Image 1 (cartoon, rainbow, N blue to C red):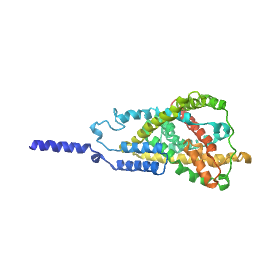
Image 2 (cartoon, one colour):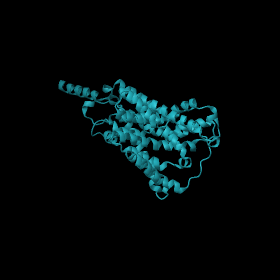
Image 3 (cartoon, rainbow, N blue to C red):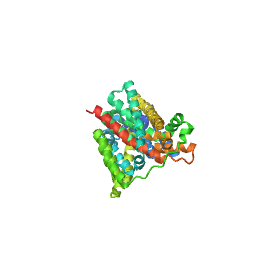
Image 4 (cartoon, rainbow, N blue to C red):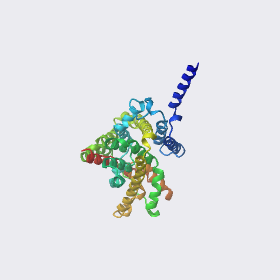
Amino acid sequence: MNQFFDFVSQGFTQFLSYTAFANITTGHVVMIIIALVFIYLAIAKDYEPLLLIPIGFGMLIGNIPFNLGAGLQVGIYEEGSVLNYLYFGVTKGIYPPLIFLGIGAMTDFSTLLSNPKLILLGAAAQLGIFGAYTISLALGFIPEQAAAIAIIGGADGPTAIFLSSKLAPELVGAIAVSAYSYMALVPVIQPPIMKLLTNEKERKIRMKPPRTVSKTEKIMFPIIGLLLTCFVTPSALPLLGMLFFGNLLKESGVTKRLADTAKGALIDIVTILIGLTVGASTQATTFLTPASIGIFALGAVSFVIATTGGVLFAKFMNLFLSDENKINPLIGNAGVSAVPDSARVSQMVGLQYDKSNYLLMHAMAPNVAGVIGSAVAAGIMLSFFMG
């Protein structure tokens, strides 16, 4: 009888050692609270729910504590676990090109083609990348890590994952969470900066309606765009190649089924996988480190620099433009590649000062230029550090 009770007692003790209650740490509690905040912002505030809900729920999954020495193969960092296999698409940079394929298939480059000078705003917003790179170096990160961290300034989650998987795979989780978090928080971060850097007269500038772009121009753009950008930065080919391929599927008019798949089911599936696994990678025992916290802070700084660069460069361009061709500097924020959220912010802030001044179409030009710009910047970084 005593042997039976000893067996039950030992079994119960072993069972308790396997439960989350026995393995929980303060770090797990912190990450679970952050996950709940992400889910709250997505549902209650409608802040990029397609990103924040998968990431937030992934954080919950990744922070259910378990006995690391038990060999359960349930954690994202344990070889052989399902989550580890899914995370392979992040660590090896497989998911980002597929996301770019979908973005290309859903993007209309007409506004950029109708007013090509607005591509300069997309370039100016990349200042955040190079500003963050300099600051990261000053804080002691090695050049490869600094380059991977800096790309957060482009507000482009897929590009950040792609670059960090090549240059700093040990930081992929922290960089990906930071990039996607700031993409989702565009409506919170950007408006105060835009208002601070502009006056009321500038916010009410009305821009000329964009001209009509021909079908031939739309078809030629992805072909010429691919050749121009990838001849300069071949290392960006996985991203830009898929972006322009997706756009050709859309604009050719003869591959509608493929374009619909790329911008619908495919991008939705990859978004689920990338969001869930990136969230799960925030496992407290691995993720919650001073380096991760520093990366999150650097991401905020780079995002502020990028927004500032875009707005100020629009004001600078106005010094050389006639009154009828002036640019509303509120669209400068859209130079970061959070498509289409930063363009919506331009529209939202503009309508606060003039209820009939619709900036969305104009803002989409620097917005899509920012997508190309961040990928080119990533290619430049790769060419410097992968050689």
